[in-house]
Image (tube, rainbow, N blue to C red):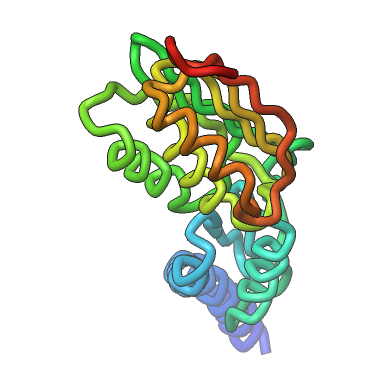
Amino acid sequence: MRALKNWFWPGIITVALLTVLAGWFLAGPIDARITEAANTALSAQNDWASAEVDGRDLILKGVAPSEEALADAIKITNEIPGVRIVDNQTTLLSLAEPFSFVITKSDDGILLSGNVPYGDTRAKILSAAELAMPGIEILDEMAVARGAPPAFFELVQFALGQAAQLINGEVEISGKTYTIRGTPASSADYAAINDALKKPLPGDAALNEIKLVPPVGQGG
């Protein structure tokens, strides 16, 4: 009986230790597989988000561009096989009220400032600015935020076209209002700017102010 006890308890202890060690060695690969699966799933539509896994608890991180994007990322990670809970440690991109965008044209070039939506809109605006005003230096001081009005990029394109007709001045979009101030390059540009502003603006924007200095020889 003593011999049986001498064999039994050390055996139990050995099995327990092996079980603990097996779990310890396997935990890393399981964490890695869940992490890889989560980040792969997120990258398809939510490249702003990233996932880390601790045991079977998934930690979601990143700056969400919208409440809808955040809800989608949480849903995706909750559906990853092996995840026990999702610890949401994300933050929401700041909301700009009003959402403003300004084009300032001077002898030094073009300054683009104010707000821009998350995503590829910044690149599209810079490309449109280069197309509208080739050869002019462009300074980018745009800040990413939520709250862009409908048809924001289309309204910016329109504003860039009008800024190109100024020698110097400023075009401002604030929420859904549109303001232009400055000196047109010619009488034809002066007329073209005013004629364009008599038509509906992109995104149903409202005209706030037109303050143009007529070129020399052009009546106000």
